[in-house]
Length: 218
Image 1 (cartoon, rainbow, N blue to C red):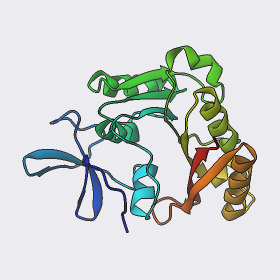
Image 2: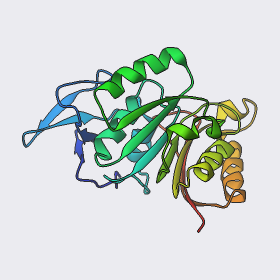
Image 3: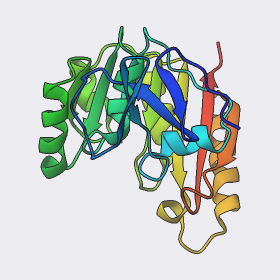
């Protein structure tokens, strides 16, 4: 089941693919495919947790063409580049803390003008607030403790309505059962006045990971 529907998304050989914002250029060695004269980039669910969520049957996809997105833990831009293909009328503020990885991210952003690289620590949103406009969606893929609070802090700081967080259980507690970690994350997000829209495992694409989608209470 792959319920996500968007004019910039096709399904090719059972996988999602995004209409390329930058035709003819690969970001991470992904396969390119021509559909009715348009170039699509195959979105590998084993290289992107957002694609894994789609392929696993995720039901809530808050990105639109006009969305402004804050991406926490953008790394070298793999998933962010696919979001770039979708939010063609918006912006993606890509926060990354590693200077080495940030250099790779900047190269991707050079060819995708809706991607803005931000060198910063996702746990300290005030430190990069000057570089980020208010956003509609916060997407988080940062493997460290306190993942739920990090999402909530950034949503609050930038007045985001929607949030998505990929929870890596082993980053929270290597001794606890993953489902226990996921439940605690859901409870913490609710304590932070966020409504759970979806929460699901990313198996079989990612071990001990879950995606949680939330909406800020009005």
